[in-house]
Image 1 (spheres, rainbow, N blue to C red):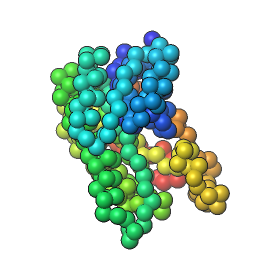
Image 2 (tube, helix red, strand yellow):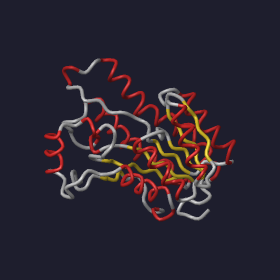
Image 3 (cartoon, rainbow, N blue to C red):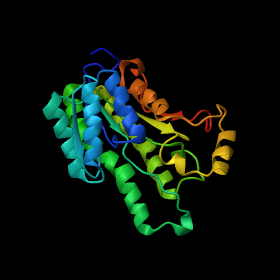
Image 4 (cartoon, helix red, strand yellow):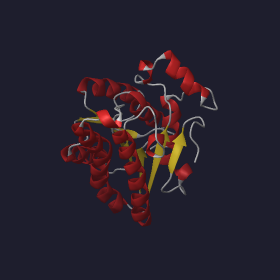
Length: 250
């Protein structure tokens, strides 16, 4: 196959729906062989079928990204299937909207375990293979909520994504000498299943603050992830790139 990622072997966590699924399909369109991940095996099998019909190889791993054994299985599956790991996209995660005073203690622990520790685990498991190869690319999914306070996100979510941004920079600094690039993507308001729950009033308020006057799409985010994963971004290291229509600029 031809494409920006032709011949690349990629792991994409949280890829059974939403932004993660858009990333997986974009990678397939650009010729990558994939290991997809999620918690629902039926959804993963359906996506695997779609990707294979596009002419790309695809394996899947179902499991909780907050468990180290899931990260180990992802790395082992990619190496066994393709002999290498070229790209890791840490997309798995979730948001919550508790106020600080109402945030349950267990929600703090669960959020950090899934959004931050899960990404650390996958990096820990794939980096040794990338070092052996002398090349690799990691793209971490963050959020503008990790850069500034957000009315539609709990403190636990913002802290988890701020941690992703910090981890991205430290990994980028430590791994660049091995030929491994690490960057992050910070989406703003994106049209997903979650956004369908918004009231019409909230949607209008949000749109009024976006210079482009539209919500982003999962494909808008996926296109940036493809760019950061291919050779076109070969000199970009340690960045956390906003994808939000100008809603937040820094």
